[in-house]
Length: 250
Image 1 (cartoon, rainbow, N blue to C red):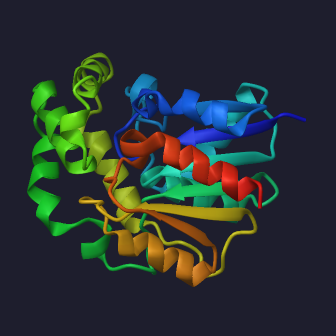
Image 2 (image 1 turned 180 degrees about the vertical axis):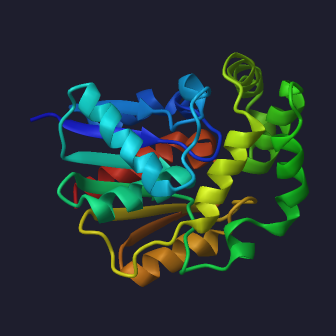
Image 3 (image 1 turned 120 degrees about the vertical axis):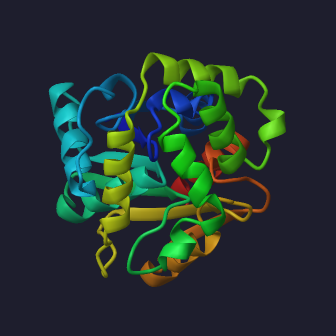
């Protein structure tokens, strides 16, 4: 049976933000079905109300895959808020999730709030949430905060601006997603799924110590990229795909 890999992005991001990583990942993994989903309130679902809980987001993903006729077990590759969704899903429905790759995420009780969201970015993120129609300024700020190689992604910014203009995430939904992320508490015991944690040493948004604390608490495999930023699949998607492939082969 062909494996199903489900990709989930983070706060206010949509499936198109995976960019070329989807194709890179497909090549590395081989015979697999890869599905990138939007969380409610983002992307094509921008007119939906974002759930106030991470579990509610997981419930939506489960229902959407069922609607598409894609049966479990699933393998998940997820960033930040999406990784929290993956953990909630795997903890509540262990029979459905075989593997989770958690990228640059943070969760209570393993990390303090000032590690989960670096204080230097509070003002910038508030401005992004309430800039309204100033799409280019918003996306330039997000790129600067989430990539350590922002100057090397000249082609990315116009695409991100067009995504925001086509499917704008409302300030209300951005706030609801942030509330869900802040409130989420991971289980003390590791979910049954096989887990891999990937993190970026130069993550300016979420302290890399959050991923390290999670991997340590659950005694799972971790790989640390020395130079990438928060958006690890953007800064070095090939490295991410290779780490997952090597992990699968061990």
